[in-house]
Every structure is written in structure tokens, then in C-alpha cells.
Picture (tube, rainbow, N blue to C red):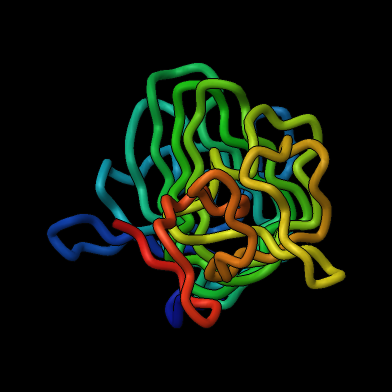
Length: 212
């Protein structure tokens, strides 16, 4: 965490707008007295297009709402719970850098881009009508998420299970546990398509898949 040399305030988040101006946020409290993460304050007050960087904190919870797009730089820190969208407009959160995530909820009409994220996540809950994209990382579970494995995988990626096998592209997210996103091996071709990533494959030569 960052500490103000003048007043001693410990800042847990830095928000940098598109012009490069930075504002720092500390943990605080809601009107009802409950603890409020600096991340949540940054999500509310940062201008659209800003990058929000974690600096520290013990309980990191953030609600992105209000119809804007932000980038969250985990900076090697762990976020407890993240919500993309609740009631106001379409929101988009790009999560990048190494760092673990406890839970990520992506609500209908909202999007989460994790194509530059690496780490572990306990729960990824994807609501029907939302968009989430993964290229790496390990997810312990998806709860009762809507959609299939293919609905959250970037092109050419697949879910590898703990036993080394791969989940089918059409497998329901709610059935998957402890899967890691990897480059697809294209080792199971059925009717001209890879069973794990849905890539169109014309032929395989010595284990290498070729399309048209």
C-alpha cells in the first residue's frame, strides 16, 4: 500500500485517467458504517477509461456500475470479490496482470476481459447475456453460471482438467471444476472440428492441426 508522508493515510488504490493524472484512494466506510474498500471508491469515482491499480489492502471488494469501462491492474495483489454491473448501464472491466481473485461476478449486459490476466480464481460466475473472455489462469468453479466452456474461452484456448484431460468446448460451465486455460492441443478432431476449442481442422500431421 502507498502511504502519504504528510498525513500518514494509507492508500490502497491508484486510479490513473487517460491523461495520466492519478488519484489515490484509501479504505473507508459506507454510510451504514460497514467497511468500504478503496477499490470500490475508485470504481465509483474514476473516469471512464481509467486504469485502477491495486496497491494493497486486506479486504478488496469492488462494484463496477454506472455504465463505464475501466481497467483493473492487479499488480500482483489479490482481490476478494469483484462485481461487473448491478443496476446501471453496460459496464466493461478489463482485468490484467498477475494476481488472484476470490470471486468475479459478471452480470447480464456487462463484460469482463481477462485476456491479460494470470492467477487463480475461486469462483467465476457468468450470468446469461454477459461476456467474459479468458486466455489463461486457473478457475476452481463456476457456480450455476450460464453458458459453456466455449462461451468464455478466447480463440485457440481450452480448459485443461486436473487429470490432464481437456473439457469439451460445449461442456456446461456449471459442471467444470479446477480447470486451467491453456493453448488447445487439437488432439480430438470430430467432424472436422476440434472437440476442445471448436477450431476447424482440415487435417492433422504428426499431431499438428491444419485448417483450410
